[in-house]
Image (cartoon, rainbow, N blue to C red; front, side):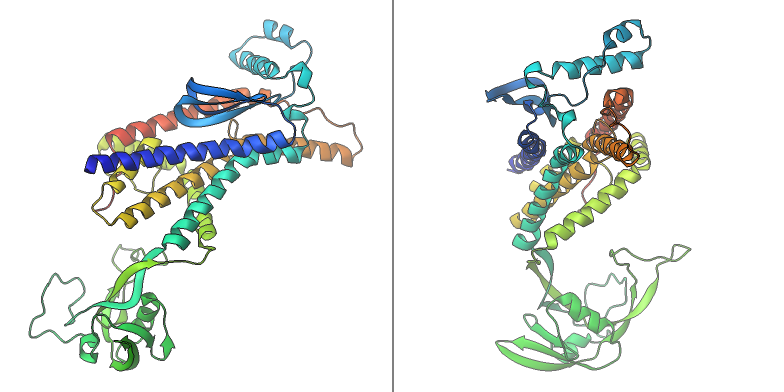
Length: 442
């Protein structure tokens, strides 16, 4: 059964990735067709063709390697200038050859009968829409997934219903599992709080979450405050006196705070000795958008530090040390995590929530990564269009003749270098995910 669940989690990610890629390419396809560009192919995957079918002027199909996709638009770049063949014959050097090969491949996409339906002739703003459409679809899908996750399923958090009441106060960090006769009675037990009580207000302030109630209690050490609970349908007012307790300080992200010497920073808080029931609490409808923005910022930060993160992955691979769970992963790594989550000994809803979060985060990564302003990524094509728009605006401002379309084939050598780096990065992550995978916290 565990193996079947593991395979199910893996298939969930593979299917989700396939849908994400398909929608990404659809985001390019739809505006391209709306703007009249001839699109010869719409393909999911790379490598050998598994199957395809032609509808109208476009061939739709799936290829063997589900690591991406593409649409083939006519005339992505301007046609080769006159005399280019002679230049190709006479020129020397690999870079010039690469440029000419790219020009020749681009020329093959331009059908003389559809010479006006080429991508490079579109206005700049239309080209930007076509290229931005792919990443935008990933962003939309991520927002939908996060909205279903946060506003449909909800977020696990402490409710105002009491699950447990401590009978005594134990020192911070104590491993003691039972109360001794000499241990002081916990404030909540002394006040008469019982499991099943629902907190209505603390110190005169109505509360709707356990976190809000805890904040008031922690801010009231040594002070007697009224605690209103609902018990068996009736409201009961209790008098609670939180005791002063030392607890380690945490920052806004819940991480422990340490001083310059690495010692834990402690502070005094009020302690009552109650634990809350945990339940899924549905969030406002805008929570999905907020989560997408937060995840986008995290991915931007990861990409900005990618060389360091990749170096750490390489070191961990060689030394066998545990990898950073927040570091980069390959598709294999994401699949392994999905399989482990699906097979974990946890409630079904918890596992579904984690898998949805994983798929949403994957789409955010596709959204941000594809906007990196380097060819062959979508962001590189957007930069080329913006550069041409800037040149045209400059010429118009100074009443000069309109400039020729930007010939992005001159950037093919740089494109190949970037592609090589991406392949090397993918290979490193793939090997690391196979031989030193990220371990999920237990």
